[in-house]
Image 1 (cartoon, rainbow, N blue to C red):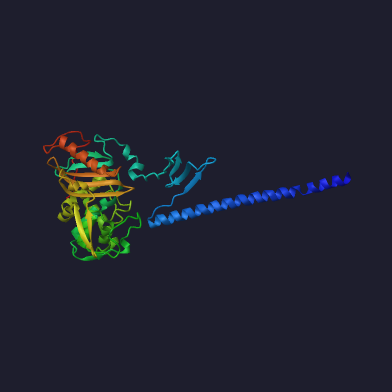
Image 2 (image 1 turned 45 degrees about the vertical axis):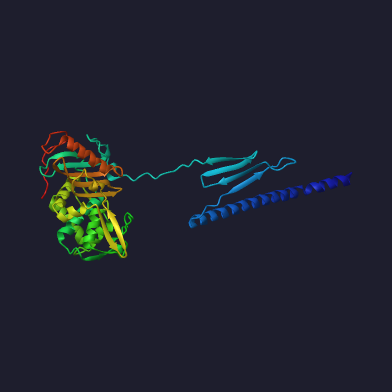
Length: 393
């Protein structure tokens, strides 16, 4: 009996070791299977990446399962086909028929909220007006009589984006520099502030006249910057002349820091911009180039086609004398024009318009309203003020 008890105690002594070995074996088997699955998934992802880069078909993951009834051949097989990240299709055969089931995974897209303009941050879009314009700032005046037909936040000082180029073009035209002088686009002309693109690559050489055309018609940033950079005295001198010209025109709320409008520090008000539009209209070159619908330039062995940024230029419903568009996120969509509507020469300013086409829609609303209420004979119809508005020049 003592001998038997001794043997039982000896066997129990090794029981913890046996359990440890069993647990170790199970863990090893689990880790190996996980590693194999990870390796297979990594290989599949690599093949998919290579196929996408090569433009070829993306490999699909296929799983097959088949069960054969006892004593007979399999009459049912199933395949799971992954046709992309969000689509999984199962294909199976049952009783000689092919059954396909497609499942789509729901995708939640998180979009970064749009950056607010200065006008939105200032609450200007909360201002109501009788035409329900999308622009937070607007001004419409008669160029001949100086009558204010419509105004909305016209004293607000906001970034003006590429409306800046109207001043740039006016100064280049008034300087009477050689239009046939060749100017080469350099790295200095590349936009490092907004990262905007341009088809005028570094090394492109065009005449001053061609660059002026592209700056006013299609709002070409590198063209405008090159014009200011090559002005006698350099870029700093040109910017100082821009501000001096603004002061001479009576634009007391206007400031320029560069010639393209990419900087949000280029700022003005609707009242000041009306003065600029009136001055630009008096320059035949600016009138002609800003209202040009399209233009071609030769760059090396290629011919590049440029178009106007203002589709109203091509509309038969409009008779536009001078115009310029502008956009950066801080300024919103902007538009200034001199146009003949209902027999009257009008200056229109629209700043900080919300929506890609809203500035055009606002101009159309104003045109229809003027045709209905402010014909050339004049009318005291609803405008906030009909006091005289002095236009320089």
